[in-house]
Length: 399
Image 1 (cartoon, rainbow, N blue to C red):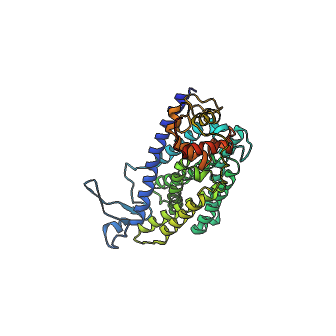
Image 2 (cartoon, helix red, strand yellow):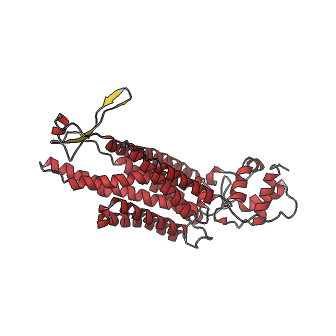
């Protein structure tokens, strides 16, 4: 595919993915808030007599709303019934398409890091796909097992499952690819919950009512459990979506553990808000989240061995020669590195003007985090990194 068209297609799919994700997460947050904010109607009220288990009044956009939730179902269904499913399906489909466009079609460059594990591109793709499917299968079996009746313990086991997945992927892929595949595995679990559990349960309940039968309350309970799980998954998944911008996290030697600290912080913070909806201000949960994030920040601080002393004169021509040899294969209008079709992150380094413009970014990625070149595929030496660092520290002068 033409590099420009591939890049433009990736942009459109990413845009769709973000929009659909906002809609899905927004509906998840709203309905969890709604469930936790409902108040039981008076026992002798018309609502209670209709089987309403909870209701509330709200004002928004200049109008008043009175949502009601039935204990099981109303006596009769209305002609028009709104479903919430395409937000989830569109998010997963667009996210998977983006995974293919950005990572799988460029697996040799974006997924394989020979310093971590020597893999063929096809092996990396197969492992990535297996992580998504396998995570859903194991999670679903856990929920259907006797463990599924013990929510707290189930949550701990699922967290351990995701931790094991993060550890395993970090031992096969480069950091960015490992993180994104942890995210796509969680996203697959979330979409699987909607497609295989929540919507089928709701369809069975509706079908029972259409035939004059009483819906099975267990369907509602199972759907509710998976919906709550999805709600707790949201903050970790959103972090993983943006994590590829933060090399200090995904390039860390223990990147999987740092990631899980952040995931745990997200779950803890989300739990605070879920409790807050019920009027319970459990401040220990955001405090725990802050401690976990602080620990992640401290642990992820780069502690790499010092670069060696610079040998020889440091000037722009020397720096430009290093960049031409080690960086331009990926950071030019027409990259020549196999699997790379557009300049990575939009960074260009093929002209003096571009090098000067990106001097601080070069220093951060090459000398501080040392994540670039990605997987050090072009074999940049520590002496070359030291030259670039010394040039930037001296003012990044164009001579």
